[in-house]
Amino acid sequence: MIIRDITDYLEDIAPLRYQESYDNAGLIVGDHRTEVKAALFCLDATEAVVDEAVELGCNLIIAHHPIIFRGLKRLNGYHYTERAVLKAIRNDVAIYAIHTNLDNVLSSGVNERIAQKIGLQHLQILRANQDEMTGSGVIGNLSKPMVSIDFISYLIECMELPGLRHTDLVKEQIGKVALCGGSGRFLLEDAIQQGADAFISSDFKYHEYFEANDRIVIFDIGHYESEKFTIELLFELITGNFSTFAGYCTKVNTNPINYRYENGR
Image (tube, rainbow, N blue to C red; front, top):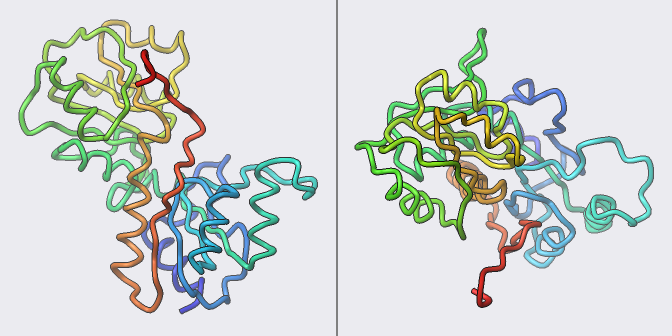
């Protein structure tokens, strides 16, 4: 089994042409012709994740986020991206990223997995492309509407969150929910126009919360937190279809944001 077999399978699910213009999905480090010994699945292919791959005997890392978004002008190890790439090259570890192309498909995509976690039904793409059944975000319905304050506890439990940020609970009940893994601020108006009671995403800036404008409840659950289940999604996709090598979900928490609570909790 070579890397090309794995990437062809993933790109059949989420073709590279579906990625956004700013993205850098695909094989970032390595050779498609390399035999796969074992694979490690993660959100971010940081230096610590490369160390973990080496320790586990993995010569392929499959990440959601590309470790390189823009061209590197030098490789001297002064930046975390450079250190990760250098270590991967030195240890013959390939790095593959499947990012916004996996965000932009419904079936087996990032947003479908989030929707499954919170029990949404009758899913549709929130902002669909005109020519294909692809696009950004999803929208669906809970099996039964929930009182807004109860939905907060439910969301924290389902998504295994340390907490969340939200706007005023202007909706007494939450029934129709729109969501987008990662940074989904650009879809807020789509969620409002389609009658969603709530919009779940992350990375809202202070003034952007005002854009809810008493028409919807924004739940900002954190970027890492919204996409962390992509790791198990990728693991299931690959190990469920290839049995000739071992696969591992990373144990490294690559979330760059730490939380501290009152009294050290």
